Image 1 (tube, rainbow, N blue to C red):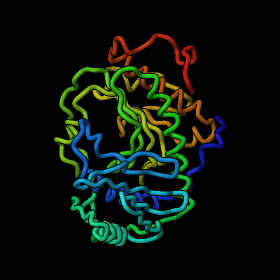
Image 2: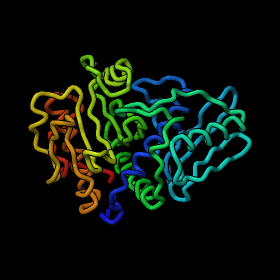
Image 3: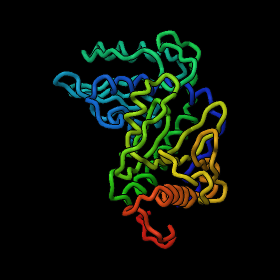
Image 4: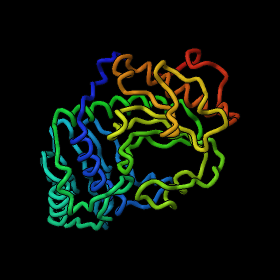
Length: 304
């Protein structure tokens, strides 16, 4: 695929940080209403052709859905009887929270959520957050385009694996899109320590041995990147040779990273090579016996 499918992501930190918190509010609505699923798979949002969605959520005997539309810049609430559309625009997290919750009450879909962000340092309660208030439509549209392209490649990568594998899903806490493969073995207890996230949630999420690949738009320290990690990290994993050029192990993140700019320049082939080579390193070094092949990635048939 042409590298031009992957849009550049110039500095959009204000919009990025505001969207992160908006998705947390919507994600917490899904969390409050959806039955618990292993590894917190009831929590994420899902990529659509226009943005992100909760998928249908139960509210008593009713179903409704909330979706971010980064094409027409709307938050769309679909119920069994009507649709409400709220404009996505520059407004504070507090204002977004109030408008959304008021609309749900009008639709007789009132829900209570935990009122503070997770997985961020120095969280501000949603109802008090007037600090984060940016929304650049062009930046949001580019972000939506990156999610669509990453989802497309990750979906094909997921299909190559015959063991237990997660959906391609967007975790609003860490603000990343990922897909995770499982070896079938239990993992040692995770140490926890993720900011503003109960350790028991982290430990249940990482109760099994995994290899995960994903896209993260970055933060104040890191630019946008693709990542791949194994838990537990097998001996020698950090020193493994992976593809493409530019991919490297980051000791601060405890994972392999591929700067997003490499995929902008090289297109799908860079992300495919990164996904396959990092998984194969994890599987080979971790002895995922029946699930790893000795054939190099370029020698294997693939549906990309």
